[in-house]
Image 1 (cartoon, helix red, strand yellow):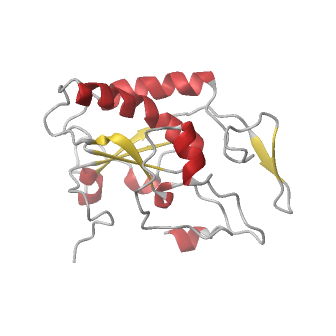
Image 2 (cartoon, rainbow, N blue to C red; image 1 turned 45 degrees about the horizontal axis):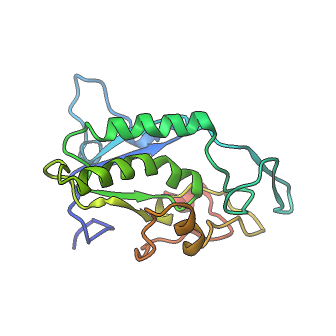
Length: 195
């Protein structure tokens, strides 16, 4: 049985784009050989700027700037975060092997982060110039809750991403036909449960 949780694609390399580096995927010094997991995963740590939100002990989420999705804990990227997403798109278009499928957390800011890359890929695809090895699956974003942010265990339900219709209206590249394989508990999970 394969360890691939996404059996519809052939995994060459997985790029993890996130706010904070994962300690378990850090590369050893250049003098050591990377582990199998480190060879499969390449981590791109960015500081994606987003609007702030807060939560009280009763699970009431608040934001000072309204979210396009209407969910307080689902803010948009700031203009600086949008600039960073464009820089990321440029970087992703230059890597080898080329990206052949795009998965993203279904939260709005995460989808926003991947949108410039997917739009660049769409222009290349439409012009017949998509690089060899890049798949047509790079012109859409598959929403995968299994790569969403971690909410700690709580006695209340954490906010969930907006529904597919709302996200498709906001980001046309959103693949509403994709069926996610992982769904986190709405009440979060402990660190021990997630590892």
